[in-house]
Length: 199
Image 1 (cartoon, rainbow, N blue to C red):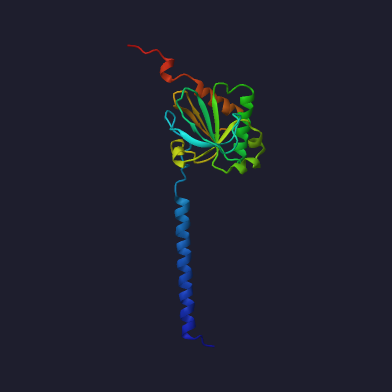
Image 2: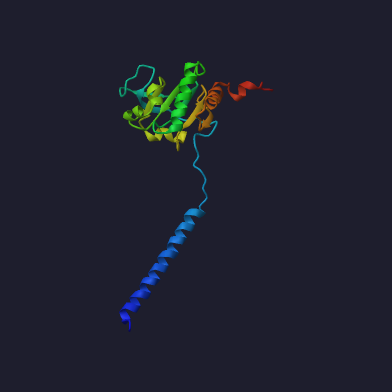
């Protein structure tokens, strides 16, 4: 039996195309796996002075119903603050909200402003029992540009800001001990106030 010439040529052309496809796929795989996997920077740099955030209140102990007027968080207004970037569908965020709520109830956050910020719609708060049960203020930022200095590239992110508006600590936190450390960090006096200045 003799194979027609066009079938033999088609067979070799398909084999060549398949070889090129395999080589291309392996090169792409090598590029993907060969890249350095540096995690994105999470949170503002310690010592930074992030700007204000305009937000709409979704819930909170201050009597705010969803919607209503625009509120502002202004770092450096004299009151230390813990700002948490959270997501109601994130289990670690629920753990953080539970820890913050317990710390507030136990008086560990006295003198601190605590603000939970989420980009999700108000209805998402009903997904999580921790978000439904908290009396902490929850807001939805109005402008993504306001968030850039805070670098919330992942949730949860907790940022401790002192009364002068300086970031004292930032990072992932969810356990009560981590919340306690963050709250103490933003209540400490400025570094220059700890040591006497010699002239």
